[in-house]
Image 1 (cartoon, helix red, strand yellow):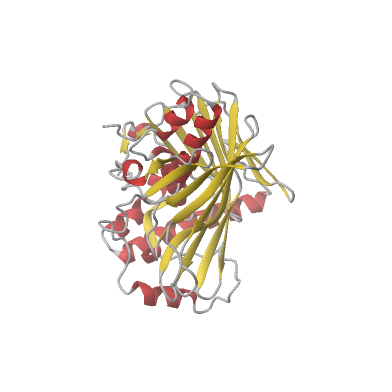
Image 2 (spheres, helix red, strand yellow; image 1 turned 90 degrees about the vertical axis):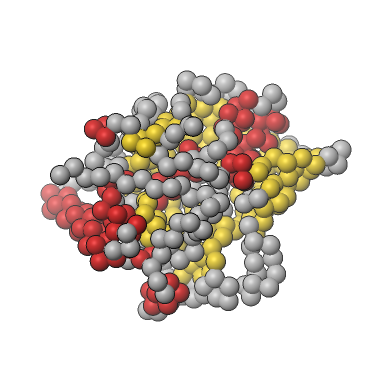
Length: 379
C-alpha cells in the first residue's frame, strides 16, 4: 500500500482560528510536560508528544517563510530601481518571513537527513536537516529563470526553559543574493518566546539586523511584545531604522506591527509610506499539491511524518503516538548501525562545517535547485 503524502495549510494570519490541532486541556498538559525540567535547561533533545505538535515539520515551516506568499515580494526586491529601493524591499521581505504561531503546539523536530523540496513558479526550494543533535537546518532556493536570485539559510536552534517561559534563539545567518545587481543581503532572525504566565502566548522578540556590503545600507529591527506581567508593551510590534554604515546616521524610521502594517518614515522629508501589509502577503495561502508522486523522495517531510499527521488531524492521539514512536525508533536503529561500523553520516545536498568563531555554515553542493514534484498553486 502506497504511503499517502500529507500536506497542510501554511501558517498564516488565519492560523489558530480555523486550524485547531491541539489536544484538550492544553495548559494542564504543558505544565505537566515541564514539571520535572529545571529552569535554564536546554530543551534541544526534548521529545514532544503528538498532542503538542502541528501536522508539519520544522523544515516545512522554514520553507513556508519563503514560498508561501500571496504577493511576490522577492520580485519587488529584484525590481527596485535603485540600491536604496531594493534594500527597503528586502526589509519588507524579511518581515514577511515571520509567521504567526499557535500557542502550545510546535512542528515536528526533523530527523537527520529529512528533506523538503518544493517549487512555487520558477522559485525552487530545497531544505535538509544536516544535523540532529544539535539541530541544524539548511535551506537553498534558486530562481534563475525569472528573478535571477539565490537564498541560503543555515539555522541552529537553541531552546531553553526559564520557569515561566521558553525562549528559542535562532543562530545562523540568512542570505539573499540579487545576482542581476551583484548584491548580497545578510540578515539575522529574532528569537521566539513562549510565555505561560501570567498571559499565555507566543511571539517573536529581540533584534534582527540586515546589511548589504555592496551598497553600505543597514537596518536594525526590534521586535517587541508584552512585558513580563503582560501589562505593558505592544504585541507583535516592530520598530527600527535604516542607515548607511559609513555614517551611521539614520535615514529612515520603521514602525508598526509585523502582523498588520509596517511603515517607513523618511527622516529628511518627513514622508511616511507603507512598505508591508501582512494581510496582502500572508493570508489566503494555498496548500501545496503533489504534481509528481513518483518524484517525491523518501526523505520528504510530508512523507516521513504522514502517519503522525493523519493521527493529529483526526485527533486519534494513540495512532499519532504509535506512528511518531515508529519514526523515532527507526532513527535510533540507524544511528546504532552507523556507530557499530564507524560510519559518519554526511548530508546529501549541503557541505556543512562548524567553528566556535563562526558557528555552523552550510553550502549547497549543487549550483541550482531543480523543479520539485511538490508545487504551490499560483492561482
